[in-house]
Image (tube, rainbow, N blue to C red; front, side, top):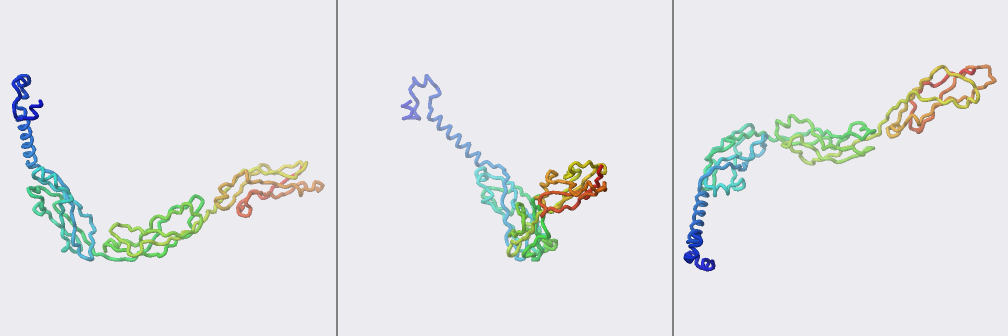
Amino acid sequence: MVNWLKHPFRSGSNQESSKNPFLNNIGKKVLALVIAISLWLVANLQHDVEKNIAIDVNYANLPPGLVVVNNPPEKLNLRVRGPRSQLSSITSQNMLFTIDLSNISSGMSKFEIGTDQITPPRDVQVTGISPAEIKIEADRLAKKKVKVEPSIGPAETGYEIVGKPEVSPSTASIEGPKNLLSKINSITTDPVSVKGEKSKFTIEVPLRSPYSIVKISGDNTVKVTVDIEEKTLEKEFNDLNISFINFKDYDYETNGNISTELAFEGPFSIINNLSSKDIELFVDGSDINKSNQNKNYTLKVGVNYPYKDILKLKKQLPKTIDIKLN
């Protein structure tokens, strides 16, 4: 083997050859294999194949005062044919198709695209193209002043927005296609969150264009003032027990079953937590004079409840109870 490495194209000894015929002229065989593989690679690399590629479309020289209002394709799909080595080097970065818009006017323009308009690399042929026609719709640029409508999120539970939010400035200037601007009477702001807000506040927020093609001219922010107040709620309680106090050892009776109804009004944070356990109804018998021959009394029903300086008792039934001494 050492001898073969020194002389790869010289046959080995007769003894080695007789033992392994494959080793006969091994150097020539390896060289022949390398040449065969090289010829196969060259033949395949030069063989024509077809491939689909996408290239970018560049829209150039749009006349001043015009704006494209449709969405023309950003890429062309090509069917190309040529040597594999050439096609493998084609990318969307090294092939670009430009459409000259310098002669278009307001309205619809059509551009037919033929395979002869594409300049491919050497030895490459364009056999197909899609789309074969591109439509460009243009409109005149216009400006318009419109009203700003703030977008306000919901208030927290128990709170509410009082009145209409204020916006400063109340109008904004927009720029875009004339026909589209004629349909726009107002624009909105980004959503204003009032989460966690419990009083009047002011915040600066960006304006939001209704269409990507419509631009906001000048300052694109406004100040929005929102007045937040706690809700005033009403809560009812029915069939509460009435306590009879200071009746000593009097034997008395009332006019049958007494049905009670109470209603309170107050701020959400207080009235929402108000329960029947916080309320006491009572009739005080302190003014009854047993020595008096009068056996019938009309006594006032008193009500005890917390936050009397804040909560209002809007409804009370009954307000009095008839008592008869036995």
